Image (cartoon, rainbow, N blue to C red; front, side, top):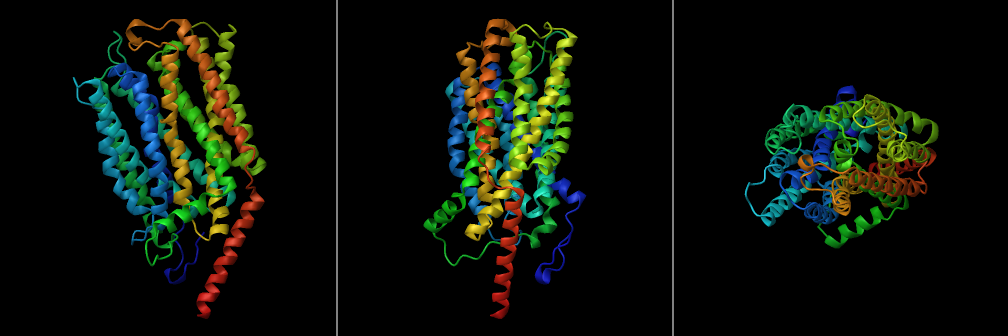
Length: 490
């Protein structure tokens, strides 16, 4: 639908191509996030030889720095003025530094002392996270402007989740079947350092290309996007006051806490998923590839399901229903296995049953994630009715932290869990006892119930319904009309 905007004329339609190029950016985000979640702990622990607690401490330091950097970049993005608008300069600028730092992270110098390797890893993580924010945050912050309708917004964010799933699948295929494919003699695999060189080059090039294409996909919308008010002078305390006013929103606080708790749980499960697959269920890398493909297929179903759940139940109730369902399917196979109700290891019935559980888990997990992102988007107008400013960048900086927490605090806790169960550093060669694997599985059940369940309990207090959102849109439209009338009278 075209939108008249003064002398600019009708706004170009946000059609199929624009929506898909915009959503494509999530693939770049997820290639980075999935690589960090799935491989960072494994690479620096099992391949390079660092203590898992050392790896986790680097991630914790990075998360601490992120907590200051992300809101700052979000606020700057909300108030940045240029001929390329508020968001696009940051997105274009991020492409090269993100890609080159991603490559360097997986290629630390050989034969260095552990302290030097730790410094290399920490430096790369800090730089990667900072420039990653330059793309991810402004890109996500465009969603509320591209789709303001309660249901259309959910569909647009579902589309981003779909491309994010494709990014995750790309990582799994490139890792398990291309660069780190295990040979018949046991050579290669995810613990072979040589495969990480080719993988890091390929993934870095993919990230670089996707960022540029996605940013260019919404380039022609720039003249019609919101422009921040001109500031007569810079005031640091004035900026802080605006940040506080924007973030002092009950619904924002609720969805922020809920998303952060969920992401920590997701970080633990994603970091240890490969450990469970290889050492608890005793699956091969080929079987893990099939599971990854099945999971992506389930993502498409979850993306299809999310808008339909929202239309029937609303975002809050819908997210709680799909969220608790996903928890049941996630912990189900481990619980059944502990009671001796799962098929024996190395059998086809076990593998096919795990595929079924993984499909159901992912359908409801992705649907829940889409609904939570849409809740954050709805906070934009809720905040604007009180502050008079659209602060998508600042508000979505919280969402940016959620995603980083997946490979941040989650990796930290995953490393501590491995240390607690005495998981061996050279597990691929010396093997892992079933007792250690069982202890890890039980800890995973506890983590899912604590964090995923805690997220859903927090979401029960979220208060923006469909009716509230539509009232916010009407109020903002009334204020715009009043401002236009005053300007015309002057």
